Length: 523
Image (cartoon, rainbow, N blue to C red; front, side, top):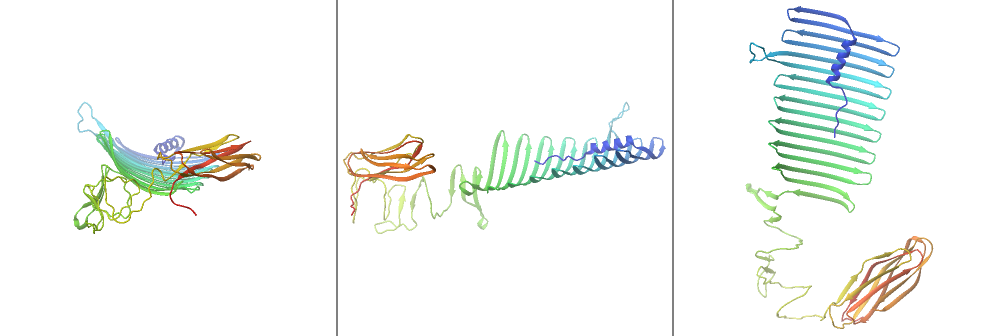
């Protein structure tokens, strides 16, 4: 967030005036007086040179007073050089005051107030062996017993051995009774050896009778050796009787040297009423994720609709409300529907009923009418009639099935094993062909070691013998298989066992047991 400037203020200017009046000697003084009315011109000056410093101060004062009014002008010019720094200051101040007697004053004592106005200008430049600074203050204000207002502009440029910064703050404010309004803007730019930053903040505030309104705009850019970012935030907020409404817009873009890219824009409107918040919003973003570039548009709303105004008539062809989507008319080139309800019928646009008809019809009664049907699951029917050719192979139970076991990884000289068991859904002794296979990984960190692999199907074992495993981090990969046919038992068990010696590491990946049954032949 934009910070406060470190430059001068009105108190600094008044301190310089007070110090100058205390140290300078009167060079010229002219006065005039008539009764209670006085006028004074005064010029004070100090010129000093010593072994350690040189300083010159010049003060000019003009004052005019009557019984109820006073006006003054003060000008201070000062230059200073010593062994550590050089400094120059210029202060100009104009003041005016008027005593106002209240209309309600009585004979016992008159109540009064004071109307005042002033303008203060302060300019300073300072240099030393490590930094240089220039600052400027311009402030004007006016006050009565019921109201006041003013403008303040404060700017500073600061350059040091490690930092370059320029900051400017501008404030406008008014108050009448308890009603207030203000505009404040702060601009700041900064650069050092590692980064550069530019930021600007502007706020508008109004309040009356406890009701408040605010507009805030923030813009910021940052760049360093690893990233660059830009941010812009705009917000509007009002509050009345504890109830509030707000709109916030947020735009951000960023990129870094690791190819992380992000662009985001969001808008949110919300009201807080009786302790509850009601909101609607939209978010748009593009981001480089581990899965690749991803873009998305998100909406937050109780009701989302698309409106058209063809011919002056407003229609809503698309509405989302209460978790439901309403579409007046839709054309789907390719649709996936997890669950659907048909209140009347679902049919093709060319449907004609009858044995020679075309198209298809799925009415809510369940009496479907189609030309051709492909059914991949079970068919249950109490009866039916087939005309033409029917081709089928009769099976009881599973025709083909594949079981995939979990991976196994064992370090050191232990045993890696994985067992997969298949149970036929039919109790008949049906002949089956079985294939047991897996991907084997063997590794030895230091020294050549050995491993042995055995595949077993219902007690029929295939021993692949002893395998030398060379040392190294890359390891040894291989695919192993064992097959049998003519198995009639309802249960088939396949076991893969890997035994290693020494520091051998071993893994069984994607262990698979395939069971098939068919009536075709192989040549």
